[in-house]
Length: 217
Ligand SMILES: [Zn+2]
Image 1 (cartoon, rainbow, N blue to C red):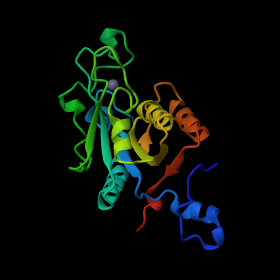
Image 2: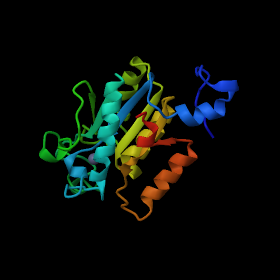
Image 3: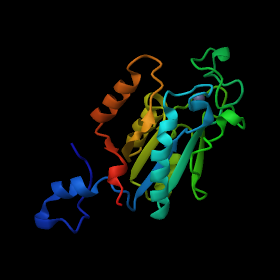
């Protein structure tokens, strides 16, 4: 199941790589980056495109953010950053209500989201006629990760069945190993079961799922 490269591990007794795999694999280390996907006011409960229970991801993401900061690992925040007449809005024939208009309060990052000053912001779907669910779509994210020599990308945020799923697909397409923070994603479920299907697809793609227990104390 695992496609992790653990040949660099020097501490494994008796060459038992499967044991090392279980213990070490999902601990953030050099070569890892954190991507926080679209934790913006409009995607939180009460927002214009509120994701049910979307606010519950905040403590998990903040916990991870502090850990990545402490380790000096790169952190990225993506954000939906639309023009007022974006093609994804219903007035233009799209599926969504108006949301995340660039510069609006709804497009701002959630107040409770801890913001690392050294982090890089990735704005997406900034052009009227182009939709972008993936944080890689039409952005510099892949280049920046390459420049930072990142191989694994830890991903949390909103929403599981759209921007997280598509970002995971593109991470794989860019040769990265995605690790989804399983307690730090929530689904829109525009169609019942969308979130479950997205998780199943990610599992089928061999995606790893990490949680706070994977962070060293
Ligand atoms: Zn959008």
